[in-house]
Amino acid sequence: SDEILLIAPCHSVHTFGMGYAIDVAFVGREGRVLESYENVPPWRLRKCAGAYAVLERRALEKDMSESSDEDRFEKGDEIELCVRK
Image 1 (spheres, helix red, strand yellow):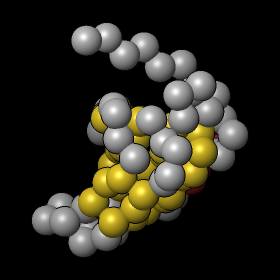
Image 2 (cartoon, rainbow, N blue to C red):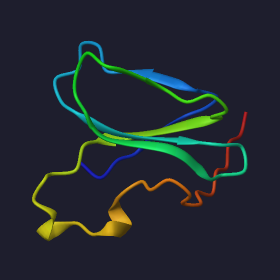
Image 3 (cartoon, rainbow, N blue to C red):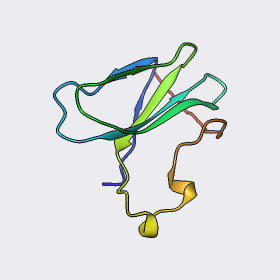
Image 4 (cartoon, rainbow, N blue to C red):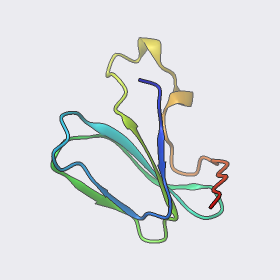
């Protein structure tokens, strides 16, 4: 699936009970990726002090022939966040 879940406000996530690995990006209020983790397996915890939001998605397949560097969450990337109440 190409879906990305935005959780805000949030500075930690867990994969307890999940049946698959996820990619995670912690994003600051200014929209910059502060930390990113690929292939976080089930039953793990990740956190990032100073994060405002988290982006989560099912981990990309290891066969990178179908994905590019643009598909990855990289530290320092800029993300445009539009969060409404």
